[in-house]
Length: 231
Figure (tube, rainbow, N blue to C red):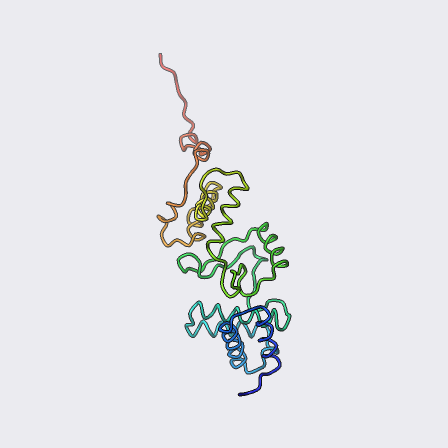
């Protein structure tokens, strides 16, 4: 058996300390080794552009989303934990106020707006939690947060807000669309944000309030109609 390099041994130790499963450890080591072979250099001598080129190469080979995500998680761990560098595999485009959603509802990728308030909250969370791989990891750090945790958080938030109506996570999606519509956002933009193929799907998500109807100006009010009393 070939002797482990000091760099690989250190990465394995880092993963063991963080209780990553043996299968995940093997997957991460394999991904970093594959990256190194592709670039022809030791991974600690590679930078962001090398990582980006490797990702482009993987996509061009038709790699599946789970396999690509596993590779990204491995590189994040290697650079962020083992080398102690800032996270480098991906650029988070906060300067433009957008966020990239990959493999979202319906397996679709899309770009949505990034709230400045949400960005501040996420930065505080990032500094405190220092998540690796997933922004919101589950009990097993190798996977995302469990959907049941989201349901419980939604119920807790409803109770804290003193709302006595039934509120679900999916209802938040409805509310998001409705607020955008009532603020004058074009329904075609809402369609893109929700990831719908057909506009008819978006229309089902949008419930117009009576308040908006009252504030809507009738086309008749734009006409200069003079009413002459008879008699």
